[in-house]
Length: 231
Image (cartoon, rainbow, N blue to C red; front, top):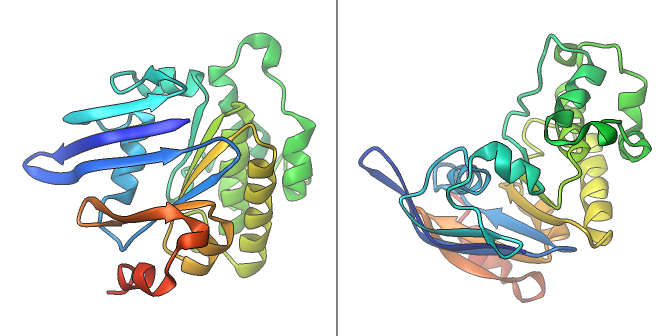
């Protein structure tokens, strides 16, 4: 389980996260919603270690990982798919996938068949450069690369951004399958309300650096959530 406790994060003098607390459990999808600029991506970056926190704690599987560098968190099973995908455009699809080997012992450095079962299009494009893929295909590649690390916590930052509807459905299917496996916690940041609503087991809504709503999906009041998503 992931537990974020009373985290405060600053960019210079700007107080970005204000006492944020959040949890994510194995076998469940936790969706984090909110307008642009309210701190959602900053929270994810804090969880994976890309942005230091000023106060608070981040626990993963009963270990305080608040001060660990990103590569040590990755070795403990935390994988991150950033907003904008950030694949390597000049590397082939296969080479992009193999960058996920960095956290694995040598004996485990193979691409599991499950990757191609989840994303069949990638098997047909192994020699193609990442930069030649469509936006939706690059998103599938970015998620597959994260899965190569055998994560126990998968963090996704707006995976539907700029993606065609058919691939959004494919990504939704994959997230649902991964969660149903029961071995992985999934933390998803999303602005597309319908996508988040259909996937979420638990949800939280951010506004101005704070969690303003949270609970289980069955108790979500759609009008209250949407009020914090509109400009």
